[in-house]
Length: 280
Image (cartoon, rainbow, N blue to C red; front, side):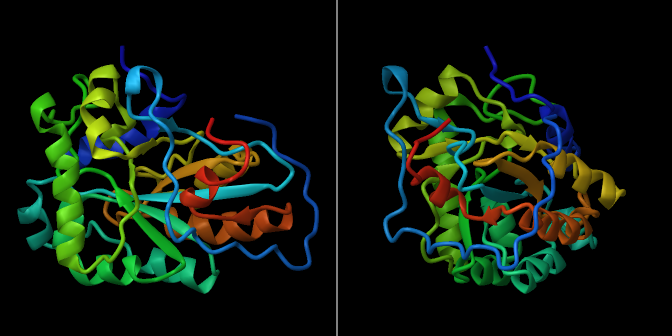
């Protein structure tokens, strides 16, 4: 049985096209100086295997007064999109990365191996910046289940190798230490997929807040959806793909100051996983 997160269709539409291609808003409080984000752990935490030894799944951090939130960005590109990139389609978003740097926002980028191959300089720059961490979004961006928003499917016997191939692509691009975290393309997974990835030693990272930035052109609508859904410990899913998520950078410029005004601080996924209170 495929396990899906509420509102997942909004984010998964991005993967399908690339292959052919809410809680009440919290009252505002002023924070003169947002709390600094701690450094990522030198040895990134992973979760213990789930029931029957299956790959563990993380959706959000502890709901504590600490008010930490992780912004995550999927850098999507499928294995067969080289011709589209050669024709001028942009699967990267350097302006978004520059904005995160200017705002000093830690973030986790879930990158496909194919994206790292297409944009090795950008992948290396992100991977070597202590503000960010790179995690695995598969090599091919093919689905790990059937019926996943039109994505082609990777066979069960190639699931682990697809993940490992992405790590190889990261190393070749010069990303020094990609994290042991994996996000399923389209957010689609089942027991078979979790079992296949157990030997890879990764934690599957999902989300509890869908930004709705896939194909969105209204940055305010994206920002409002995030601001209305964030709770302490939230993991927000967004995209680092100009051609299919053109409003994301503008939305981030509104999201970040508003959440900081409410007393939130931004952290990487590794910091949520390592936080006291454990996974969702």
